Amino acid sequence: MIGARLIETGLLLGLYVLLAGAYGCTYGLARFRASAGTRQLAGLFYAMHVGLAAGIVIAEPLGTLWKVFLGASSVAIFFIPRITWRYLERSHADEVRT
Image 1 (cartoon, rainbow, N blue to C red):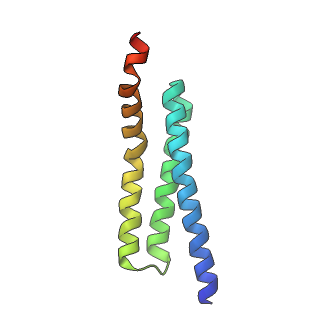
Image 2: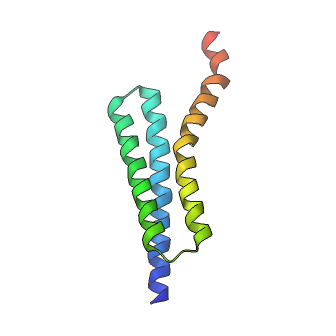
Image 3: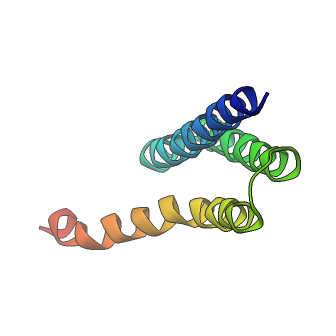
């Protein structure tokens, strides 16, 4: 039974990462296109990511440190695309002006 839980947890963590990537990609696409619909899709991906993180923390047999790490990662994942987008805007600002 432990093997089945290990595979289940591994698959859920894979989905956790996939949803984080989907959020980051759709956030960037929404900012690039200035699209409200794509921005809502990014929000949906992030909400699904957080919901899955909560489910993993509550239901899966991970140690406390791993559960704290997942929670902190989910908070960081919210800010990473925003920080990256601001950095890209500043680093390419000179190209737009010339």
